[in-house]
Amino acid sequence: QPSLKSAGASCFLDCSNLTTVNSSLVTAEQNCFFACLNLTTVNLPSLVTAGNRCFGNCYNLATVKLPSLQTAGVSCFSGCSALATVNLPSLQTAGSSCFAYCNSLSTLLMPVLQNLGPTVGSDGIFEDVGNYISELNLTVPLAITTCNSGNVDGDIQDLIDKGVTVNITTT
Image (cartoon, rainbow, N blue to C red):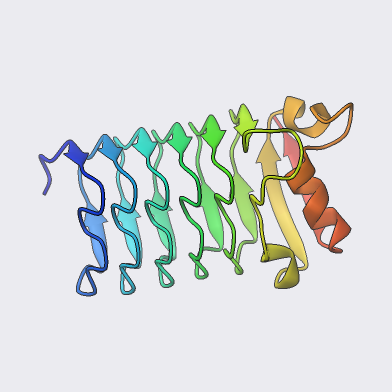
């Protein structure tokens, strides 16, 4: 596992015995770790691309160390209900529904983010999250806060409209 550079589609799908991932993976394709219900920790320092639903429905995933991640596919972390603090210092693109159903989310750091979903409107990035949290500390580039005709990206606005206090720090 430590020397593996690419993990194909559904490679570890539904591996119930998998609790921790430490690897030099650079690419993890769609559904790679989907529904690994006992996965709690991911340490993939070289991962650049995580495909659609890569970590989706990993309900117990609480710790992610992905310092090189640049692209997170559609629903990449959807259903990771134990994720509270997520630091993605290199993330440039988050696919639609990327953090949907991450119902414990409290801090999300994406300082170089360029695309929060494919549009500046609502892409379901935080679908259902606003029903569970009351506050989110969010770090994003200034452009994300003005990209929607001078207003915040529609996905952030969705949270605000649901009554979530979004504390935005810009980079």
